[in-house]
Image (cartoon, rainbow, N blue to C red; front, side, top):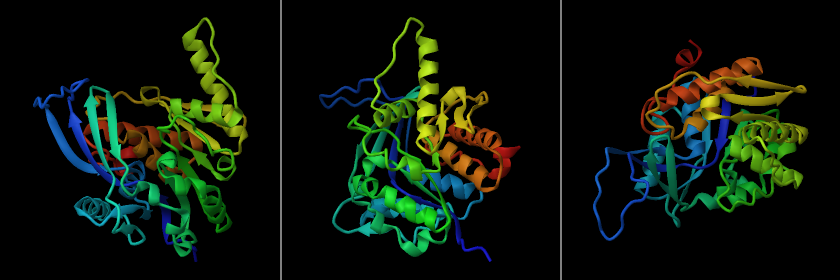
Amino acid sequence: MSRTTFDLLVAGDANPDVIVSGSPRHPEFGQREQLVPAAGLVLGGSGAITAYGAARLGLRTAFVGRVGDDPAGAFVLDALRGGGVDVSACVVDPDVPTAMTVVLVDGDDRAILTAPGCLDRLAPADVPPGLLERAAHVHVSSYFLQPLLAAGLAGLFGMARAAGASTSLDTNDDPAGRWAGLAEVLPVTDVLLPNENEALAIARAVSGAGTGAGTDGEVDQEAELERAVKELAARGTLPVVKRGERGALAFADGEFVEVPARPATVVDAVGAGDSFNAGLLAALLRGLPLSRSMSVAVTCGTLSTRAAGGTAAQPTWEEATS
């Protein structure tokens, strides 16, 4: 019998997102009221969106995070449950409110304003050891928003791997711009899931290197990204880099693996990277080879942009592989 109850355990951030579409680039203050084309209240947080997308793709998925004892927290837990995600191990914090995010969308760009609430209280001790032992794979999101979790992540991943699970990490952005603390985490991270800017920043931080410059900016950017991906792979992880409309890039077994993006009309790119994560993990856990798994991931990220918010247009496995 398999030891696993869950294909995927996600530990990370969860919050409501208020998505404001067609936002002015510079909102006017002075109590001016400005009209926008649309707005919505949706499930947010990289971890929550990844978990929701994985369940949509057919994985038995559990999520561990912290929410406040408030209507926002109830909204998050209800949304995850409604998507088939087990939230029985989530912590409801009576002392600190649920995190909240406002996303101002202007075309394919966005500004993200987050009130962290109880996000920074999530700790490795919040992940029940029994749950860790019953998961085939453990994924963590938003490393830099959760300092207690980050500080103990190497140990948590070490425990997961000792129990027979594989691991993955999407650091997301570092608001402080330091990108510190990852040197000991990468060797116990089976799959690292940054975007291009994150890959460059993490590689510079762990290597202590500066940025390169040359006469041909495009060539230099591509070469720098390839150097960064190789540097990350040398740290013992499989880097799979999300490149938006340019697809994805990985480095495995001494070779680069590239997968192009498919054409799309983007309604909203919020959460596309998290849907990519869900697709890649769903494919790898089904035993698909890396290149095919990356193709599924790119498709999942692309299809998720068909509607506003991170989860409304996430595909099923059949949609992602047809």
